[in-house]
Image (tube, rainbow, N blue to C red):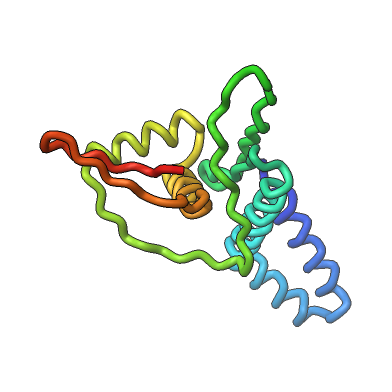
Length: 164
């Protein structure tokens, strides 16, 4: 998606508004439009990302990703899989409803082999590693609590699992 027409439209609207203020306002508008272009693009990208999040919440378990290639965003829409009652399907990873719009950053150290497997799993689902990890963590936290645990020992081997 090319953001240039939107940025140019804002530039024209600013010039029209400055015309009412005279020569000083027009000169100020000319000096401000070039430096503001980056801020305008960033604001538009933020709005597009928020819109994709809202659409994803409505489309779940499908989703919409906004990807930035160069200076222009693109969208990837993944529709929910068709329901086939005869087939057993894995539960889709949940979509996170972002209540307050904030995000946090953490550092996570993984064994290289696990990192590679995560990257492969994310690529198979056409997701970023971050999106895949957020969905996987949410699925783990939203899993139903087990009723009890049971440990069995047989001949030096230990089995651990959930018993319902």
